[in-house]
Amino acid sequence: MTKLDAPTAKRGRPPKARAAGAADTRDLILDAAEDLFSKHGFYGVTIREVAREAGVDTALVHYYFGAKRGLFDAVFLRRAEVWNNERVDAINRYARETGLDSMTLEGLFEAFLRPPFQWSLKGGPGWKHYSALVAQTNANPTFGGETMARYFDPAIRRLIELIKQIMPEAAEVDLYWAYHNLSGALTLTLGETGRLDRLSGGLCRSGDLETAGDYMVRYAAAGFRAVCGPAKSR
Amino acid sequence: MTKLDAPTAKRGRPPKARAAGAADTRDLILDAAEDLFSKHGFYGVTIREVAREAGVDTALVHYYFGAKRGLFDAVFLRRAEVWNNERVDAINRYARETGLDSMTLEGLFEAFLRPPFQWSLKGGPGWKHYSALVAQTNANPTFGGETMARYFDPAIRRLIELIKQIMPEAAEVDLYWAYHNLSGALTLTLGETGRLDRLSGGLCRSGDLETAGDYMVRYAAAGFRAVCGPAKSR
DNA sequence: GTCTATAGCTTGATAGAC
DNA sequence: GTCTATCAAGCTATAGAC
Image 1: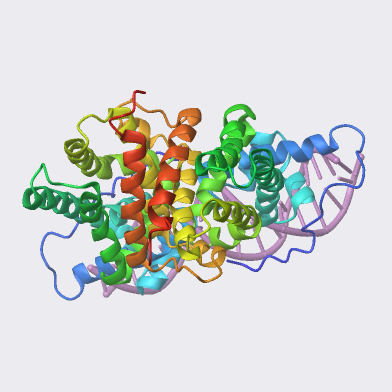
Image 2: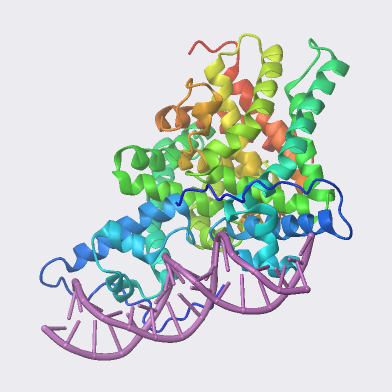
């Protein structure tokens, strides 16, 4: 809980691609930190562990990212832009190609949910770690609220705008509460904690994000209709 | 990641109610730890902080709970039994009073979900902290899986048994995936991270668990019907 | 850019007086 | 049961040689 105004923080990426592994080193550190933070959280990881897993010296971590919190933010930021831009692009594309009047909740959710699942499955280990990191951050009461809101909410606002096109008579409150239900399911799934595997006796696998997405789309669409239906007066 | 076999751990409650504040002290420590762990996680809390907030000496923390992990487990365990027994009682009562053939998904979920929301609202700050702790633990990939499974899965198995009474033709896989969607929504809600408040521009409040429960019951019932419907061949 | 070395603190945990 | 005192280990972060 110390104030984080380290004078050397925010040093950012070095000006130009230097000799050997300049950007390499930086990404090596980010990859290691991403992995460890996603498993143990901010306080559960030491700079030394990050440096060791990245195969570099601890001093280099500070050289690139300043204080520990700067490292965490850099990890979180690295993929946040891609993450959200791609989802917004996907739903915009869906709206354009389908036409505003022909959209379905299923189609819209499919466009919105599939990208993160695909990255986690096929984007390499980094994306899987990042997914888990997002899941954990979203559940964190002190840190999660602000961080998640800043980077993730704009994409969600766009999603809700498009849902309104499909359900013009839905009340705003209903839409937000419904999204809240979807959000919880999404982040729990991305965490891949393995709990579902145990609970189901191996019948379901947390890592089977393809199937998870299929269920989530249908489950959410029905849920939205149930609580945002035009017949509802509340 | 150290092995946790501190010889003094598991000292348990002192044999009999001693003089002054024996059990009091123990609960004071548990309350403080519950509060702090729920906000900052296991590694984000120091024994010293717990002792300070409890108004006792650090040595006392070790006297009662051994190693730090022993303290965490004690916090987690203290309310786990109540938490799950009450929910199982509630759904069993619902089944008994309604009759196996007349049960609805809405009624069953109402019985299952309302107790934790009520505790968090009216059980004092301790229950609210505990809810947040459960939410965070559930999202933790390394620690969450095993801990949650051990204490929480039996109750959920009973819930699924009763759902089968309502939807006899539903496939097991479908039921588990559907529950997974519900579980995510539940834990995110219990975390009360305040993100929904920001996202909705104040239209919804994370702390309004009464409303959250109303929405969740209807949303989940519709979701279950959509993915576990008897008309489904998958 | 990268490393060595180290300052300066905080941590978990225990021993032992009372 | 409770407190004082303390230790060894680990931590973040920086200074400075190369």
